Image 1 (cartoon, rainbow, N blue to C red):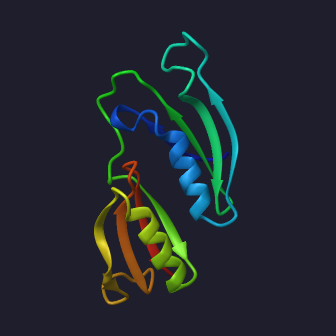
Image 2: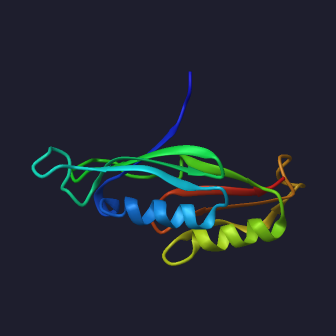
Length: 140
């Protein structure tokens, strides 16, 4: 059995999936876009410029992505986030700044939490990127 995180870009995020995976694979080491399949002309759920199904990896972990122009009653929520364990403070700071910049949102700043508050790491921060995907970043 295998589980994989699947990101669905809908609503205001529809049409931004390819930009998102290009951004993610550019800031995470050991990352790549493995495949992108676009909708065919007239195919339900999307148009030829939208991703029907894509696979990419970040630091060796695989993710799947799709986008749909159907009217969905949901989108990304901070209730589900990607949890990133960093090996150095510099790596953590750089990644957090990249993810939270250019329209992203800082929900818990890096400076506010240390081991006194969280037992799982030395430093912690939570943000959403410009695509609405939430990230928890911590220093192990």
